[in-house]
Amino acid sequence: MEVGLGGKFDATNVVQKPIVCGISSLGYDHMEILGNTLREIAGEKAGIFKKGVPAYTVPQPEEAMHALEAKASQLGVPLQLASPLDTGLLKNQHLGLDGEHQYLNAGLAIALCGVWLKTTGNLKNMNIDEHGKQSLPEQFVRGLSRARLEGRAQIVPDSLGQKHNSNLGGLTFYLDGAHSPESMEMCAKWYSHAIREDPSRLGERPHENHHMFLLQGGHPNSLGGKDHQQILLFNCMSVRDPQLLLPRLINTCDQHGVKFHKAIFVPNQSVYNKVTSLASLPTDPQQVDLSWQLTLQKVWENFMQEQGTPKCSCFSFQVHEEFKFSKCFLELRMLLRCLNF
Image (cartoon, rainbow, N blue to C red; front, side, top):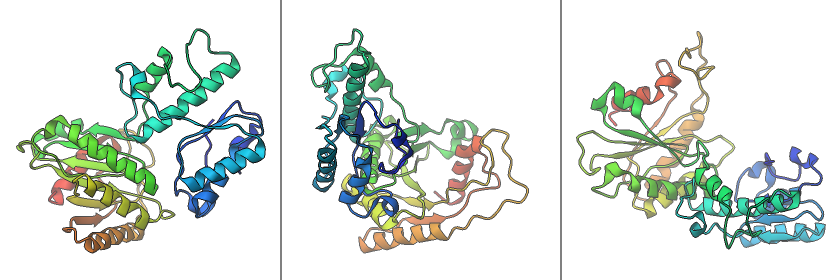
């Protein structure tokens, strides 16, 4: 069972005697509920610990680790540190989830599964050491290599737009739901690596772009990626602090030689009430308030100016009227064309 938010007051605590508990990497997230320091946040997360129930975590910042250890000691919880996945254990397979942080998550998953299988008597003929350091069962290798999580480090080529209008060039969406400073950095690192692996960009190391909805477009006549542009399509809720998120994104991308050519700030409300090819615009769609998107745009522009970075074009708007989900890539492609992207 996955905890929804925090730990101490989460509904999953109705399970009073779980087999094992796990806490992944902690960072500054949901601070309006969990607290303003890593010590406070870790204390809330440690609320899932149960007396005598084994628990695992991954390497944490010192402040957070001390809080977890204190709570574990108080409850008599044998808290152990799960090692990151050793890629050699995948037997020439690749981890299904992209991003260096996923090796921490995979190591934690292996530890938790090992304890659960052993405790419940489901090991059967699987040869596994509890910490997954020496070898992994074939079932584990298969699961880790096939793991997928849509919306996290997901790459979506725009085959629909290319089919309808090849003159608009190639467009690839890089999607991720990062929403904390730490995850923004991991997201930016993943994106930096991903676009360099793109076979259409063999001629040159490209600039970068990142976050919840990432776009990379170019003209079909470009050679070696020279005409490719990185376009950021960004949204975050108003409870997030853009002054923590956007600089982390920009700086991490910049460290990898990545620059955004355009930035678009959009709301998370849709004017469509269903997601199908037959979706139609409501007869009287309510205009979405874009004041928060304009705030995001201002934070972006101010930071870029402070850094002395060449200004990139920024826009804040709501997409509707012709923007149907089944044609979203094509319509967005046309939108970018109209904006001279």
